[in-house]
Image 1 (cartoon, one colour):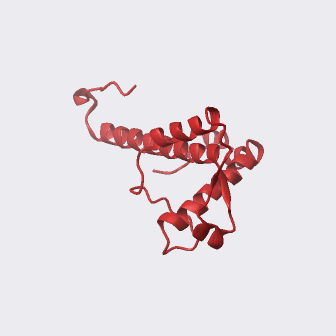
Image 2 (cartoon, one colour):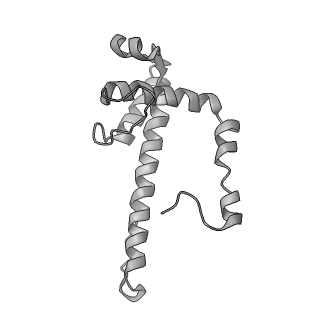
Length: 137
């Protein structure tokens, strides 16, 4: 399945480059730092900037996102220190707690989209008269 629709008009209605450069570019930069730091922590065999989501390392996306949001809003925590051995490799000494939350929410959204696309793909393969619709809310 393509990331973009094949229809030209629909494809032009997904201005991803403009979104990334005009909406929250500093936030995206900080989430990228979280990616680099965690890449070194959880995939030490890879180059720091060779980003790879190690999906099985930590799967409680919403619980972790909520914890990071509470650290920010209740505890007033702004940054989380990066372990010294990781900071030595990356040059990144701290990351925003909310950038960690944003990464976790992005991960959960990606997984949700993948599940929905898988369900849709299965539904396409089953004759419409035999589809049982489940409540996915």
